[in-house]
Amino acid sequence: MPNSEKITTESGESLSISNAKALLRKEMLAVRKNIPPAERARADEMICRHLLNHLAEYPLYPLVAYITDGTEPDLRRVLEFQLARGGSLFVPRFLSSSEYDIVKVNTLDFPASKWGIPEPGPDAVKALPEDLRSAIWLIPGVSFDADKMRLGRGKGVYDRLLADGCRCTIGVFYECQKYRKIPAERHDCSLDRIVTEQGIF
Image 1 (cartoon, helix red, strand yellow):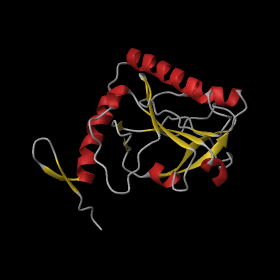
Image 2 (cartoon, rainbow, N blue to C red):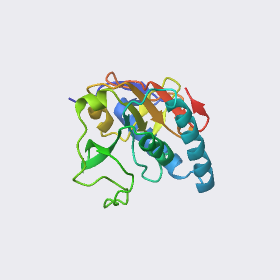
Image 3 (cartoon, one colour):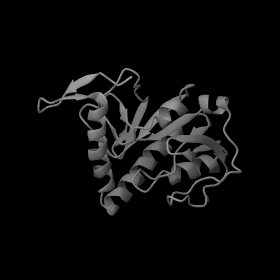
Image 4 (cartoon, rainbow, N blue to C red):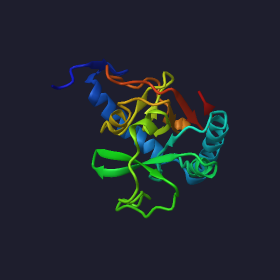
């Protein structure tokens, strides 16, 4: 059934929430893509520093994280830290255009997929539901707001992966991805925390 929820833009235009999300998604993907390399590297360093300090305060919970596509914040230092301290690390593995599963990894030296993104191979073991429910999740996104609402790529991947719940969700963004108010539908849920180069809230 088509989404009938509407919002009014600042220009007075009435849009469905799904259309408003699509327009914002296009705008913010361009913003993220166009971050200058030196600025991106500095931001990645600060994001990893904030996360390392934050995660060090927790017991050794499983960690679910992503491998950057080159435009998302690069969390390699955080993932290496989790493996070095003997923690369980899980990452997504591509199945189809909108479907992923989560697999356990013991290394970050993956072959590149056909999109050029390193990814675990078919021999990686799928995560157990209890691992995912007890994990801290580091989740990328296209945009976020002060209410910790997240705008994703529009395919509902993380909505499905998180359907059974988890210990904590931390959205990982650059500060330039912040938007005044993410258009939200009834089923949209906020994140527990947000991290950018400016800190964690």
